[in-house]
Each structure stands twice: as C-alpha cells, then as structure tokens.
Image (cartoon, rainbow, N blue to C red; front, top):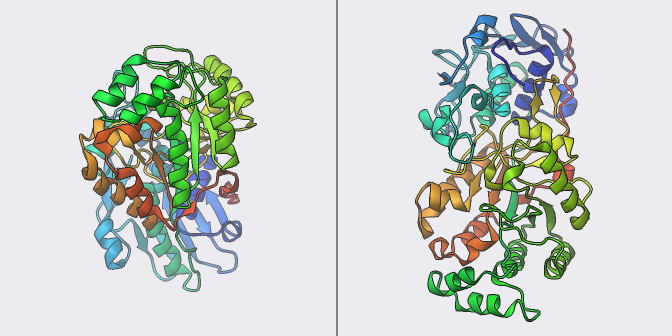
Length: 467
C-alpha cells in the first residue's frame, strides 16, 4: 500500500489540493476553472481569467521521502498576515507533519501576482489523511491498534487540533491576496451522532442484571432484565437505544445506530440480530428516522472474508443496501478502507483514538481516502470520529462534568473550521454513573447545528490536472 520508495504522484497531489481547497471555502465550480500544472519541483495553480497570478506549492525532493520514517517530523510555520484574534488564539501557528523545519509563514508573497507555499503541504495533507504514520510505525496496543501516544500529534501536543483543516485558513489568505474579489464559503458546524450497540441485554445475563442494581444503582434496569426473558419488556440496554433516539429528537439531532452480527466471544456479546425484540426496536427506530449501520465484530479486523459475511447478514436485516458504520473496538488500519469499499459500504467512522478525544487524521471534514496501491480516491467516505464516551472515562480518566471541557473544545474546533463533530455514545453508557448527565449537556451544546447526512456529502473536487 505504501513503500519506502514512494513519491507523491501528480494525481495524489491534485487530490490533496482538492481537499485543501474544500477547507479554504473554495467552491467546486471555481476550482474547476483553475489550471493545475504538476512537475517534479512544484504544483502550480494559475487562473485563466487573471493571467500572471499563481499559487506555487513546492515539492520535497524524492530523497526526503526515501528517508521518511517514524517518528514523523513536524514543521511549524506562521500566518501570511495577522488573522482575527480568535483565530490567532486558537491556532497561533500551522503544524505540518512530514515536513522539515522551516521558519516564517507557510505561504509567502512574491510580488502582487504570486504566492508560494514554503514546504510540501500537499504531500503532508495526503499523508495525514491517509494515516501513513501508522504504516511507518510498528507500535500497537493489546488490540492491534496504533496508539495515540505513538503519534506525532501526541508528541507535539496537538491531538485536539484539526491541523489539516487549519491549513484551509492559510490557503484562504493566499487566495484572498491574489484574488481580492473572491469570497470563501461560510463555515458551519455539522453533527453526526452515532451509537455502537455492543450489548442489548440478550441473551439474559444474570451478572449484568446484578450490576445494574449493585454497581449502577439502577433498580429499574435490573427489573427490566429480570422480566425480559418472560414478557414483552425490553432489557435495559436495548431500551437504552430508544432513549438515545428520544434524547436526540428532543434536540433535533437525528442519530445513527450501528448493530452487530458477530458470534459470541470474549470481546463480542454475540446477540442475535434476528431476534424478535431487536427486529421490533429496529423497526421503531427506523420509523423515527434513525439511521441503521454496521458494527463488525472484533475478529473482522484484517479479515475481509469474515467482514463480508457479517456485513451481508446486517445488510439483509437492516434493509440497507450500502450502510456505513464503525469497526468494533476501533480496530482499524488504512487497509480497512479497501476492505470496507470491497463490501460496498458507503462510509467508515472508525478513525478516532480510543484513549483520547481529538483529530486522529488531522481533520473533522469527511473525505474519501486515497488508495496508494491503486493511485485513486476510495469509493468510500471517511467520517472521522472526534469524541467517544469510553475515551473520556477509560482513556482520559475523567468523571461526570470533567468530561465536558475536552468535548466542548472539540465542538468549538469543529465549528471554527466548518467540519463535522462526530460523537460516539454507547447505549449502555446511559446507565453508567460516572457519566452523570453529560450526554444531554453535550446535546444541548449542539442545539441548532446542522445534521450531517452522508447521502448529501460533498462530491470530490474535480480539479483539472495538466501534467
């Protein structure tokens, strides 16, 4: 997929330029009027309606990529001109992984007609979004996942910054300098509420029922579990899916439920997706406008055949031709994109860290990943996961209201760059005492935001390339 002798292809650079243009508020129609020339030394944008004006992106030499290895270097560059105070406070500089050290601004003027990017920003965007850092490093945790502490973002303390999205502001300044009459599109926050349904209380588990009463102090939940095998009462965890949907509707924020079809193992609960009670709940949720997606089991990671079998079962039960979803335990690698594309899935939302909230691929904008072995965009959308309930309590060791500041910071960062705040809140977390009333407070913070709908996601930017 990615080898040590790799050099960014012209097509890959044009892809990265499209992602940068999108984040700068450039419309697809405007980008299609550009002339783009890719040589071994640089990528040059010119504007036929304004002869002589150009933006030049310098390329790193081929031997720079041959030497690339973990830990990934990170350059720090400045603004082209002083930004608004809020922007200067939130992003006093631009942090660019995969680039050598540089001094001065990221974009630099050369007279009234040319702006030059001082480092190979397009390659950095490409490698960030593709998570190549995880292919360079052998570090993995007990579940085979690349850990947050192994990343450049952790080492340089920018896990909570969508650095790729921030480059959009720098490019916006460059375009505004050359094209004073151009105005970027307004940035708006969008939201994707998601719920991995790992457990539903079926089959009956006496230990879980006792846990509701003794550890969680949830007597009613224990009663529900006791009655569920013999009556029409839903077990507590399955009832929680309905409560989640009701909470989301209260704040006018539709949600997505990701279901499992994996067998019972030590790390998969193994509930029967064909069961009558689950079928009824899925029907009721669908009637309320809830999206249904897939949550492939623990052992489907790096096992495309097993993944295909589980997805096939879920597709039939959920009645969705091309659902999206998320890998169980966030067991993901860049190869997962090809596996999911091969299953005909519409999107993945696994690219987030289990130990912390933040921006694993440096972005909160959904994007189509780049497949190096085929030199093309995937026919699959990645909707980056920004915050997860388990990350707050198990990864960061927070409790109750302590969870709010890091989540609110991520929301505000997403809003600033016009991205999508994707939240994962498990159905069983509604019964855990250490979350308190955190979830409704997060929803209240998101009130008034636009719901991100995958079917209306932005199309790829078709910037013309002239080799």
